[in-house]
Image 1 (cartoon, rainbow, N blue to C red):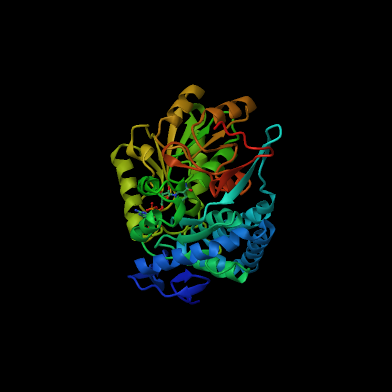
Image 2: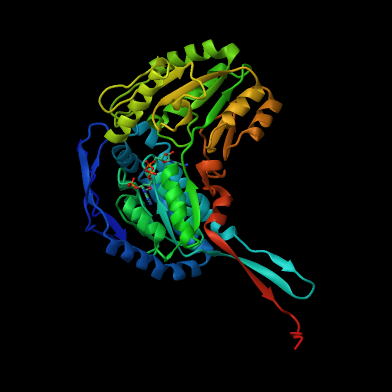
Length: 481
Ligand code: NDP
């Protein structure tokens, strides 16, 4: 089957495809490096065109009844579902993630966001504040033009998670996907147009960091929402501060997963697998520091190695494949260097290793200590560190001893302990007896260096709108002079 994934053109501005006039951006199928499309970056002039289109279209979109805006998003969700197989295949080509994952995780999650925020839009109301005669009412209004900047690991989901609440609240968006995975956002633009979105409300520009930086500093932009690394987040947040722009920062992590000796071993092992190896480990919320209580540590490692030995690695388009390649040669180098570093620091390789070709197999290190590089830094690949612990207090203290705070998990059958530990963990999202489930109904985002703001849930509405107070004077004006 052909792997050609060339879109009609590289950019989407004012409801139409437009060819980029900047540098060429070849798009590779991560499995074999084959070029599946060649896009062109947006020039500064084209970024300005996208901004102008968004700015011109936004007021009329914001002036629609929320139920009308919501209807467009819900229709788009339906189109995504109707085209599920084609979209899953495209996502697999763009990201190298197994088709059995992209069928259930990526676009389906994007469709849910569109559906959820489409339904939520008409429910957003203000407050009336009585003042004994006079009164104040509040209006939750759109911000204006929002910039979205995406990472490469969940390109379509990220585009939907940002566009859905932004558009639901009456904003327009200019979105820049990662240059590694530029295809999904263009599909979303096409689908939104088909669903009835007015031209200019969702625009896509392509390019690298310079194009992202142009969005973050454009005076027409009221808000910047980034999914990416902490280093990029710090730059974008600082750039946004210049113009006092709103931000949502979904950044990286080094999240802990704590397994107590009373936990269901099989469930805890399964969660550790999902917390580390889904999407070849390229997931921001991954629980890459697995703290296991000493009594069950040998059994945990044995069960883990046995289950991982059965993982099917191969062409992501093959329905049987469970573990795909790493996104790019550059990321492969980083992940392999991290594995070497773990070995040289004295951690014990339980299974996996550097791998061959474009693959790194599920890799587990035991005997990891808190000071090792692999226990401190985000690897963004399929590398799990297992650390032993004795007491609850110790596990919590060590889990929190990180500058990150995106996610955390705890496995125990002790109900009180589960809630106590979840409360004590410094993370934006915490799971008890589960891991990496991110339903659209629940807020998602980080604390500490892992970010600011929340995606999904009603909380996201607040991050894509601002509150206006309207004071209504009901009597005369009593001026003192
Ligand atoms: P990067 O931070 O490298 O890039 C993220 C996006 O920002 C890309 O589109 C990138 O462009 C763009 N960018 C780069 N420099 C700038 C700049 N100066 N100004 C504006 N935009 C810029 O992250 P990756 O794409 O490598 O993704 C991996 C990282 O993302 C991991 O650290 C991971 O933890 C994090 N992540 C966080 C998630 C979360 O929700 N918390 C979810 C997914 C990933 P380009 O790459 O095209 O040059």
